[in-house]
Structures are given as C-alpha cells and as structure tokens.
Length: 230
Image (cartoon, rainbow, N blue to C red; front, side, top):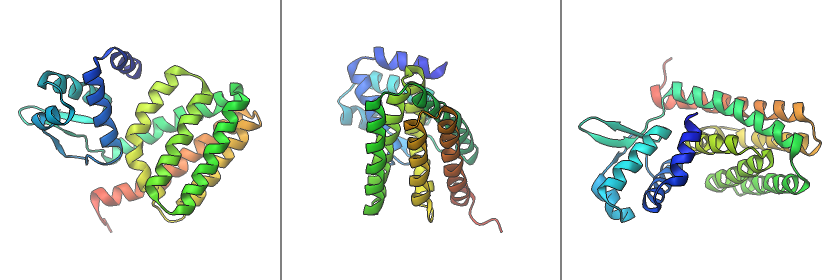
C-alpha cells in the first residue's frame, strides 16, 4: 500500500529531509506554493538549509505522494490537480472518511467524543467570523479529531496525506454559496451519530458529507479549468 510505504519512508527519513518534505507539503496544501509553480532546487537548498541531494530525495518523495511532478530536463513543479484527479480524490475520500466515522462510532472514547464536539463548535465559530482561512483550520482540527477517535493508524496515514491534497479543493466547496451552513449541518450530523454510537448512521453521514462537498466543488473546479462551455 503506497500510503504505508510513504509513512515508513517518512518515519525513517533523516531530519533534514523530513523538515524539507513537511515544509513543502504544508506550503502546497495551504496554497502558498501554487499549482504548476516551478520549484527551484537552489532556492530550496537556501530556504531549508539542506544539500541538493536532500532536496532531490525530498522532491522524489513528494512526487510519490502526488504533490510534485518531476519533468525530464525541466525539473520539479507543484502538481496541477485536473478535474479527473479531483473526482478521484473525492471518491477515495468518501470511502475512507465514511469508514473513519463508523470506526469512531464503534470504539471512540468519551474523551474522543468530547473533543469532536468541541471541534464542531469551533467550526461554527469560525464560520461566523467569515474568514475562510480560519474555517479551513477549524475543519482540519475536526478531521484530526475524527481520525483520533477512529483509532486506526493505517487509516490515519492514508487520510492525512489525502486531506493535505484535498485541502486545496476544500476552498472550492466552502466558498460556494450556502455551502458553509450545509457543511456545518453535515459534520454536526456526523458528530451526533458518533456520540449516539450509531455505526451505520455515522458511516452514512460521513459519506453524505463528502458527496455534498464534491457536488459543491466539482462544478467550480470545472469552470476554473475549462471556463464557460455554454
């Protein structure tokens, strides 16, 4: 499984490469480095105070994770997410997040459930502020609490990498008209089902949440990539 191999590689990577990879992954997932932006090896060496060998090893790791594309004779650039890529990411996310929800409902502790409920409240407050960056941060914390409650390290590894890539797409869905109140209602339903120990209800709520996010995001992604086709 690629995610497990990546986790193993990351856990045994030298500190310098780990610092570089984590820094680039965060910069890409938060949109600081834009899709299609070329990554200059010399600048990366200076920014992260690492050797060119470390940079090349780190870029190869990020290529395997889907964050970077390395072109022959041209170097590395931030991977562009195509419409098909976005569809596939949402499909995988729906399967894995619904599993996380059902596992949480089955074996999450009281402490885990309290943490999840607190995160839902934080999302609500962030949405009231109107700051999209704050909303995205609160949603990140919600998903981290969800994974903690699911208690499956393999699932956590897979979803953390997926969420880092999907974070770029979340801007499309959460900036859509009326999407934020709907998203809040959906994660509230997830939380309620988990607290009630409703395994199947939690699974369905998680699946529905991702399906609605996909419905909000994909038309906007299509428009952004291809413009008005009418």
